[in-house]
Length: 277
Ligand code: ADP
Image 1: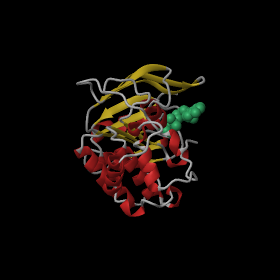
Image 2: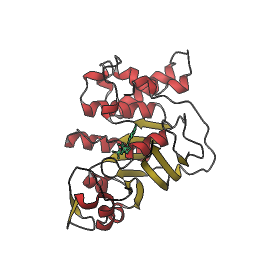
Image 3: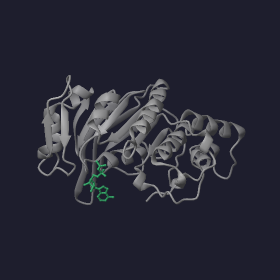
Image 4: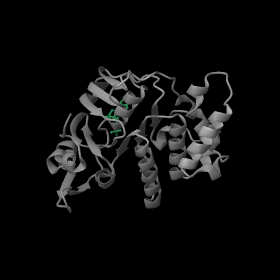
């Protein structure tokens, strides 16, 4: 379980002209069990990518490596040319179940934590920091709840507060681990409207999701993962029946859909006999 205060970063300068996010040969083992095997990709500034795959496919592991929380067993990640450890411009929003919501902090406190690396240790926020925090809360329509304890908010509101925290951090890459889970349709629409604004600001957004329809509808590219990288491309290409069968194995039923993207029905169990095992 991560406390809210553990989600902090320290600053690093960008290498000029370096691509936004590059992974080469990423491999992660937990003891003897592989979670990621030889994963390589490059993602450009302003791209929005859905990371899709069955339970246990390594989506959270990938985000933790990019965020610098977990060291890969082999391979490298470069964020604007640098290794990710303690990289300020990465905003990581873990799955809701990974956060200790009983931590007694307000919405404003959470968003101000996004400023902590810029403010520095043992210093107080300045008027510019407060202005950035207010602006971030306004961007996600959460100004009115600024003084509420975070634990009292709905799941959708908590997601928006964490987005505001990443905005206050001036993050250039956002990693959102299953932000759609538990959100109703209006909540999902609000989230995508906010992500649309971030795209206009050139922020790279990676979203782990189980929802293939959302992945097909709202993202520039889809990364299909099952320990190995199975596909990374425009949704219709990445979510082809052949790729989906490789990712989900026998637990997938592919049905004909409208347009190029197939409609699919998934069994939400994992995937013995499929890729990477
Ligand atoms: P996803 O997010 O796609 O569900 P994860 O990255 O959480 O996948 O997990 C990938 C694999 O690694 C799974 O088999 C999972 O059980 C295993 N795993 C994840 N975290 C740990 C851990 N801390 N210790 C041991 N195994 C882990």
